[in-house]
Length: 439
Image (cartoon, rainbow, N blue to C red; front, top):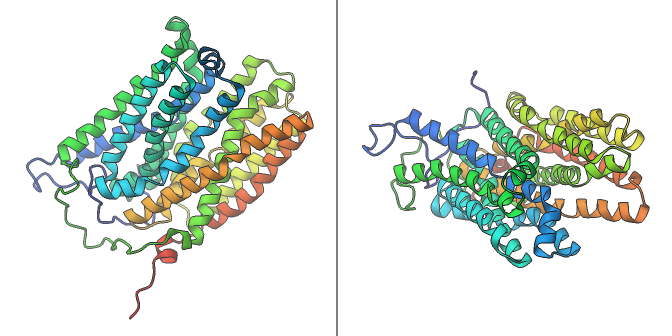
């Protein structure tokens, strides 16, 4: 595979495990060989990505059974469907501070443990409040891992940001699709208990803990006071006092992230109902949603690699937005007649997510910059995404049809394209948000 040009440079590492620049075997008798450590990080990234969405999509597949089993009201069930973006926003803000204190690798390891514990506990809490609390624990682990994955990719693979982000995004899409498609069949195979069907995903999360524990133990990263390897002479200094909110690029990327997340949550939550109301069978509607989600598996690998080869990512933003507009137009004009085409187009449009992750790694030069930009863009973006699915439901209920909701979806695609073009410009947040020292 050819080395990709990303216009990024390696920065001095924060204390931690997977964030450190791999050291040679001669640097310390306890340090693993570079190739071995790099392969372990790749395995850790893939396994972590596989576990960043099953907590959400597995619950959605068994929502009715969970409601009946725990005696949930409709409002409580609605609250549960709105909790993920809220947790991503609230807990994601904590990630950079935790990374500075303990190291990104240690925090991701703890995040995988939290996901495992939350998924194992929540089916057996016996109450809606306990289920919500355990879900929040899992979502906290997902939130910090969401933010720190771009940091780890930047640290370990500064010259392969596109391909590694693509691999991570592809694994994330695969985990999302697998949980949506397999939860119900696995529940049936395990005797029909929704508790067993949800708890089984804790096993996959537990496997994801193992490579991160190995890295933490092997590299002595559990202690924040561990030895720091010498910084590369060519690495830029970490910015002092980076004020991320002063960067126009950071704001553009945050809004872009929020609008693409809004589109994704609307698609996952409402697209099957749009097809069913148009006369498509329930089974086919579910299959259409699966097709939309599966599109992210191959494209999530291709789009980041393409993005890192371009000086400006605006053309990709426009192309994805055009697919979204075409898909919404089709849903409005002939939802049943061209259902498969609209599902494919919206699946392509939803690949703005891996593009946004790639731009996080490209719009900052240093590890501190990537961590702050990732936290700001994702936390702000997920906050912005919360009202979208709720507003679609309100418009559908009060208008009695899907004309207004689809018009809203299409209208939101226009500012998504605009801010995406701004976020895709070849500049970094350090240039915009680092105070210039006085002479």
